[in-house]
Length: 468
Length: 144
Image 1 (cartoon, rainbow over the protein chains, first blue to last red):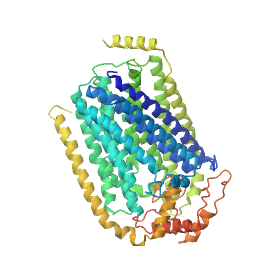
Image 2: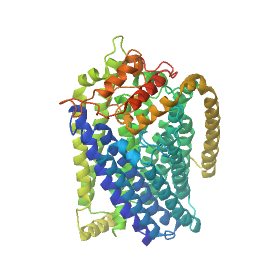
Image 3: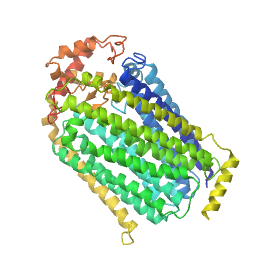
Image 4: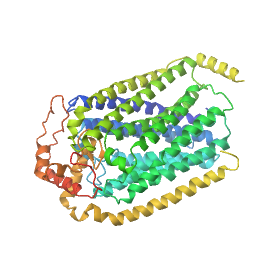
């Protein structure tokens, strides 16, 4: 770690991982509710568990992105952070606001929460992923403004690099698109149309810039490849992300009442959306192959390559699977959608956050890399989580194919709940895979507590000597 | 990527390409907004439909159900529930009202939301209006 203020990222990373564990816990609860319908009913109905699961995902990824930004911006700009104190204050504001929101979801019926928090003033709640009460949404905007101000001032007074520019465009885009969460037209069709400006233009738009910037930073640091080469790749990746992703929004406009030309536009452009993810995979593997140094932190390099591969599979392949309008006509809103969502979020965003944590945390703790033993354990966590998530995806895909077959693509369609009973076995297998994921997460957490300072120093010295 | 393809070229593709497609997207949005009234039948959005959407949102219905395919996949699609229930608002209201407080042993069950008669009528009216949106024939059949 080159600048003292980078260490503020530690808080953000720890919170991110804590919330991640909460997300998985509620994922398991929902997995159980899929097979034992009355599990925890009526204390925690499915909709509440799901809200907690998805909102925790968003919040922990945001904590991860913020931690990543606080770590890499000072290093890229070659200057201390403008205000580490502001970063700490905003951290606590965001964490407490987030925790209170989750407690609100769990303790109070949602309708009562809406009343209590003034949803009548400006109704924004009760829309998928944007369930947060108005005051939480305002809080998110304020935290984002403070965060961008802090980073912006740091960037302005330091060295300008492509990585910081791309990261800043991504983060500003994230904040700007979130403003559409305050726009909730009374007309459902228009509501849905602009709702996607938050959801799609986040995950298939500006978030890819953040992902690309973090990946490029880790690759520069761990492979020692020339910055010029890395930056050229980064520009091409994010160019393809936005060129395909913006009109790719059209794949959400097939069946919500929008004009039918979106079926053509959405199909064609979203069919190209795998390209930037394929380029990310190529990018990571090519840079590692051309590396000019062997960085002792093998685990971080593994996460960097892993996020490319898994994002390509989850976002690219599984996205393409159901993105063409004639296919989507049958698969829209089935377990196929769920399977894609899981692998895409894990591969692209969960893994890039774990990648930067893997690279940055040892440095913040005063070592180049963790001990060999610790890294081996971390890689066990990597494989357990990744394989479990692949299995979750495959089982949900199986469930989805059968669901489409029995409920949609047949002359004698069966009712929703009848079909759900028939595909129950896949939900059981998914649940078991989910337990595997939780175990992987546990192993990953355990790796942080393995190995002493001396072991790390010894292993790193040995690695350095071998590299020479 | 070889030497003749420079970083400056890559940068220009990013800024130029993104800007171009943002403008195209905004243009298409403008056009969509102009053609939507024919497809969404907004002339039928009355006070009840507006209240119904609010009831839908404030009880987080989308946390279990999908509406026009978007939402959760734990409970049936409701964009066409009005037609599935034989074009009957009463059937929708009856179903919501009759949910047991403590669920059904071993099975998924919708919570009892204790909605007022006015709210029940409104949410049914909202679902009726939703079923009349021109969704290019989606879902493929009544089962949603």
